[in-house]
Length: 408
Image 1 (cartoon, rainbow, N blue to C red):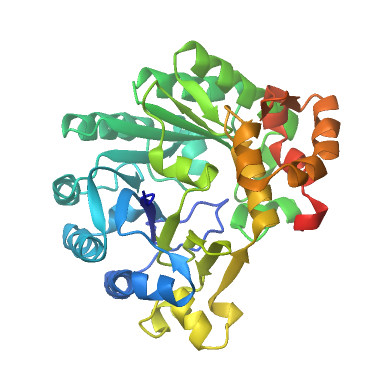
Image 2 (cartoon, helix red, strand yellow; image 1 turned 90 degrees about the horizontal axis):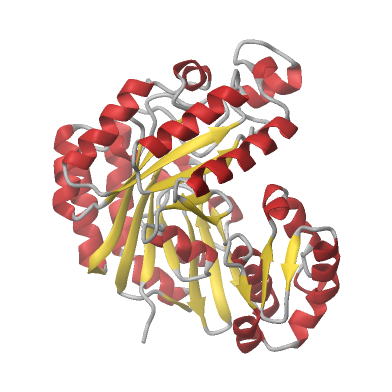
């Protein structure tokens, strides 16, 4: 049986750009947004032609769709209608498909919400970041605590039962007390899913440049130190667990039965295809898998031939500035399965790993696994490996130590 594919739609538009953000997103006018939606439609229409050209298997069946960004909720009802028309023309959407919309509180029009519900949208992820107004404002968020609570209530009354709240630990002006308040407010809201991220400041963002220059405009001097943030992350894990919102991935927590089906595809190396600016894909192929990505330059994306990235890359001499296409071989696939699987609290089933890749690659990785285990960052048994709570705090360090020389 062919495994259904997950679809990611990148919508790179915002009302205002957060100070810490350097994603491929920005503030643009209505004409630019309409041009983008039309370009997106062309890419979706030719998805299977593109996949066939690079030898990748793109299933017709789709069981998850995720609108990310940016702030996808800024699109109009008509624009969403056009996107879904293209999706249904190219793919077969499962009746119980999980359809997620990322949304900034206060930036989802009633008409757009009605259209999305009509199209089957059943999950919303709110970028709250903090329930403290000063902290949200410090990084350029436009909402207040009251707006967040009102928006959660509004979409719930409209029939959306799967609601996620994003929180960020380490924002300027944040304290242990204010962080605990945000976590407790998220729990009290009754949402089914909560994501907890540690502040990551890109050097090219406004806040990042200020941190390097020791300026004061964006609150760089008020950013908490890393040790405090690590403690707050553990505090959140404890508070959420006690409230029945169980951690299932480094940054993700859910009430029983409410895990994000789309995001699980990434961590379990199930196929997904991305459309739009800076969208990434991973599809199965004869040699194992193929990964490809669209350009992160909006002008270039809109100016490309109306062909999706993989086909264009092959026909136009693999112009790397327009994206990249990588064949994932056996050793790379093993490494991805190991590192992505370790993000999940359940860890990696070694019998499954052996069944997919054989014993030799696992034995190559064993010295590094033992070293990380001895450092208290990994649980290692004959049946399963998984990160310890300490290991989740320094997961990037763990993953760098587990890189396999033969796969590098």
